[in-house]
Length: 381
Image (cartoon, rainbow, N blue to C red; front, top):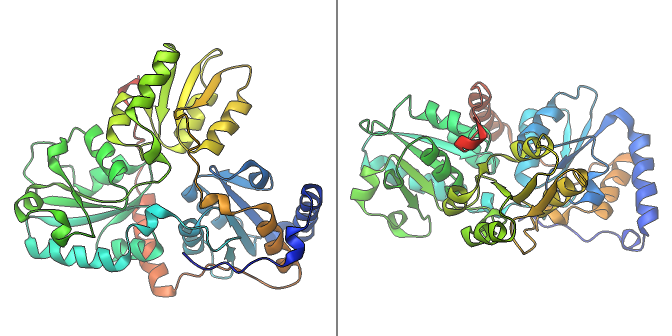
């Protein structure tokens, strides 16, 4: 996690009304030179100022399409700002309002660990290795993947990317290519299982254990080597919570993100990316009842948007909050905008040229593939 210096005292003493007025004034002053991006998991009092909302990759692509923008303020977390820097022109400054806004999942795959694991897996042999990394990873990991013949993926297109990585191999075929999936084991497992591959074809590599905590025999027999990483938010949802909401409301439909545990995904009615969840709920018939397994700010926003038409609630009875995303607040946003208005760029996220070039390869390989979303059979009837 990067260090964020404390804000000047005056920002801590501003009222809510003063903050709102000052942010809107700075936005108007900077005009088309400025683009503010707001991730779906961002809190409401920040996302209201966003020019665009979406998931991390969508926002980065939107930023790259803004030809007049000099400054991109990304109200998200560090890896998202890195992706935006990789995809935007070199003369565009990408800014993260609070440098301490990291991602615990991305931090679970450090580049040194990945390099060490890769060398050990190469030594074992047993078929070609293809690295795939979820976009929720550092620029350094994306660059490693790009430099070793792999690609990035999102929760929307993970299946398409895995099919590409396996070169069309089906369950039961001889293992000629093995996927090393970083850093979220759950997205990798749920996607591969949905493709028809058994859980026995997957192993979990723990970078903190010798040989990943696995035997040589288990590694050679595996088609999917899943990194031991997870999302701290989606890890909080359980199969018992699915049982509880169904007992409370037999008509409820459960929709969850594929970063959830396999047992949760198996009991859900639908599973898909953040964008898929939004689109599904917004197009659902009047009177529908939903329990949603994803970050609480998005769920509350959907519940408010659909109030009177559908019932929307969080799957868990606890607050499933992205605490690092929550570090981005209006005080930090205003501080950034004040500095821009006065000719200073603070908290710029820069990816070095070599890392940028290799990471771009991994992203471009993904973008060249047509997305096929992960969804349960009930989603595609």
